[in-house]
Length: 147
Image 1 (cartoon, rainbow, N blue to C red):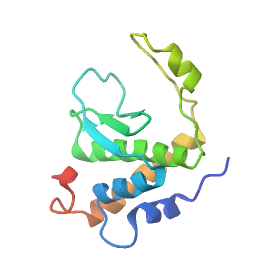
Image 2 (cartoon, rainbow, N blue to C red):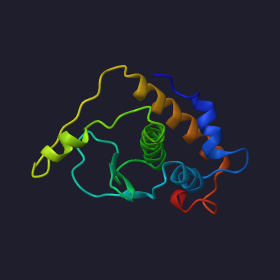
Image 3 (cartoon, helix red, strand yellow):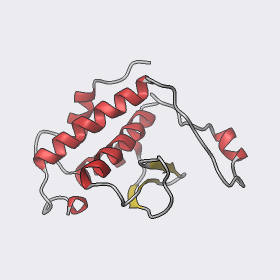
């Protein structure tokens, strides 16, 4: 599996001008052809830092309110990296559709990833670079999420 260069993906989502998380999410919505909602979700998160839930017509990224703004931004960009790779058919979901059906009435579902997974390395690099790019170029006036 060959991943696109992270820098090119950041440029595709951020462009050359002023960039905000809102603008990057809007561009990714066009790529994956689904609305993406960022939802700060109360609840018991355990060790999870964020969670992507894809539905037929939209995608939710859930994240806990307990972390610093910078950490939340990084975790959201990590999830957006997964969404980008999946839109390019470069990463498959953690749970296949057939297995997901088996979880319909479950009270708990647990997933683990392989250590040193190339997908995780790519999305971590993506999240770091996106956080850096939007932190440098955003202001609260341009990005309601960063208020």
